[in-house]
Length: 195
Ligand code: IMP
Image (tube, rainbow, N blue to C red):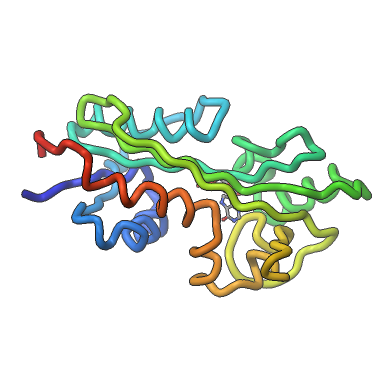
């Protein structure tokens, strides 16, 4: 039995990343239809992951998986949070805005959060997980790898920013890595009767 899982993204990079996390899971991952657009209207990462998975499942009649992630800065009351992708037009603008708003604040604790949800073909949520990676916001970017806020997110235990880490190291400690690691052991228990 082929267990098809539609990924609620149009981004092939995200599909590849999820394929890597779920390579031993026995599910075959595929991109959502291009013409299917879903607005992220939730006010939590979990709510957005659930609404994306649920709507893609219902629209395609297949099992679906979605993730939603972002950066929460304590001194900014959790901003940019679910607005992380919409905080500016480019990564450089988003980083500049965050550093400007944080100013000389000494309390620079922050965390990346990732929520993942899997929905049944009828849209009901079958599984959810969340991963958190704690760190600090630097005063200036460091490192050239990764994407998004990686150059200003410093992980004290590794003495590196996300942008200074190899992709393998980032995967093992990141919010996304932890969310998928928590999901994996639960996957075999899903009742797949309708694929
Ligand atoms: P989404 O979950 O793909 O919608 O991502 C939300 C936004 O959060 C991204 O566009 C980035 O700005 C930010 N973000 C999420 N995960 C990471 C990460 O691992 N590094 C840097 N930025 C991230």
